[in-house]
Length: 331
Image 1 (tube, rainbow, N blue to C red):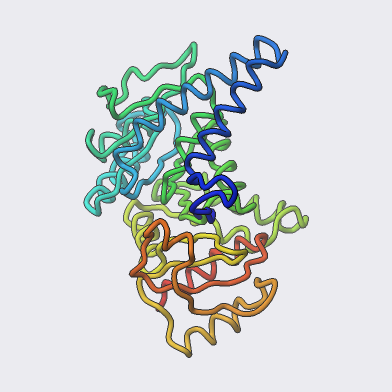
Image 2: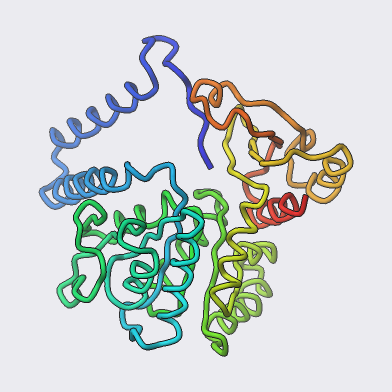
């Protein structure tokens, strides 16, 4: 979900890129001059350096779709779960998808092996009791190393177009819940979030039931929030779900207070009417309409050939926005 941008600042005539660069430099100078304390300076400086290095690793592959695979470093290589993660990455690579992992052993290695070295990106974490030993990536141009979990999780998520979560421990639960929270609150684009288990496994189905029985029933989340999740028990089902999500839907972008949805195929008048009947209530005003590229999209020359619809989205019904995307993919 791309935020709208201004081609230039009205007063200075500077490009938006120049304005952002100056804001970054000013913020760093202000922090360096203030008495914020050595520890805070260390955290800020390390975080910026880590992100700079990670941006450089990801930059050559910005145009390619990516799937992030989460899972336990303790998963043995002869397990069904390891093979499932490897198979998902391998199949998606045939569709020109890259795989992003934490570049460690277990499920992370399975994803990297399945994708192949030139199709995998890794974001390691520096831990005193765990290393990347036993992982698959060795070429520095495909790996970035992080001290902080928050910078690592940002890079594991920010450029990915789908997520596959395998059974795991606290770390996997943390990553799954964080991505789910970002989508629920509109802080991240709606993307497929697949909970993949073994054929006879109950790890994720039990987890999903707990969310429904305790979180939905108590009113702690909306029932539509569960639409952001998909439970699969085979690699083929997981891949099919991801590919179906992009069957017609392409991406979204905010422009002038409206959410623009880019498509491969636009709606007929009957399909647009049905869309408004089913989802018009998530608009704060007006209706769901066909539209052309926004001013910012024209400036960026962004996907100008694709048809579009737009709506004054209420910014809170993100589970239903996912359901709207699923409906569009049936056209």
